[in-house]
Amino acid sequence: MRLITGRQAAGLYLCQISPDMTTDPMRLLSTLGFLLVATLPACSVSEGMGTAPPPPDTTTPGLGIGASLEGRRPFPDDNPWNTPVDAAPLDPNSAVLIAAIGSGTALHPDFGANWNGGPFGIPYIVVAGSTAGVAVAFDYADESDPGPYPIPANAPIEGGAASGGDRHVLVIDRDHWMLYELYAAYPVAGGARWTAGSGAIFDLASDALRPAGWTSADAAGLPIFPGLVRYDEVVEQGVIRHALRFTVSRSRRGYISPARHFASSDTSSSRPPMGMRVRLKAGFDISGYPPSARVILQALKTYGMIVADNGSDWYLSGAPDARWSDDELNTLKTVHGGDFEVVRMGPVTTQ
Image (cartoon, rainbow, N blue to C red):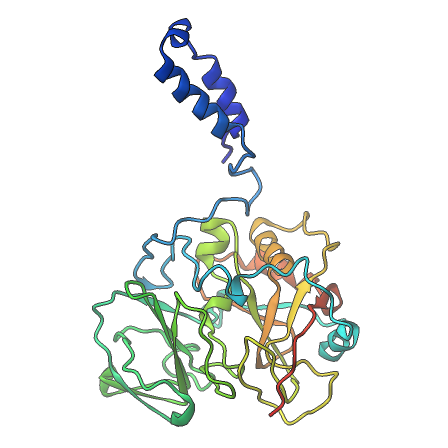
């Protein structure tokens, strides 16, 4: 869609000034006020994707599995997830860290429309504030938030109800703007209660971190949902305004803020700690990629992606959606580890 710029609008409006305005001070003042605003730098949507102005925080997300957040962004603007890093300093150990993950290893979108007969990725559901909370019994209760958790009967489980993987369950309460996440989640008695390995609750209007040393539903002690590539952002909004989440096969015994937990015994400084952030190099040409891939790659330049769990190297997390174009997403596999660089890290916590 092409919209006219403020300067174009000013020109059109100028043509409508009639002679009698010069004798009507109030009408003339109103017109000049419009022209002053209109000639400010344009904020219009260009023909390319990713330049739409963000919606107000009062936007109400939809309801249901994979619902659109209608452009609303979790966490405050100054939250680390929402902070651009395209101009941040380079870490002096960047080349070593990238090589340890795999300079020649391809980026892999771990989400899409069809694998093993259906959409794949880490699913989520948006619920109303009136959704009843249920009790959850945790294996790691000492590092889990007790709840209750507003998990509806139709809450999707990562990998499906019969899966044996991470089995994440992510629930967003749109009215209280809260995020509830479970790892290794299993419903009991038809969902009247649940068991899980661990669980975490995040206030999406706050910058508060988990206690130091605590896990979450993710190994790094981070929230999962804010780091997912989602269809509503990529295709509907045409822009991702936050960092993304990825995994590595071998991490370091250590974490950097905003991560709060490590999941390794390897003390080598050449291994990435949890919370390490990488960005796509500024000179990487994304112009030839299809639309959805360009939006994702631009986000990787602007906001980067954060090491959040142990898994396959350079696996980028996203939400499943039957509307994804797997052909477009698969073009991301032409990007390699060597196309990234590490943003300068803060202190590494190792205990």
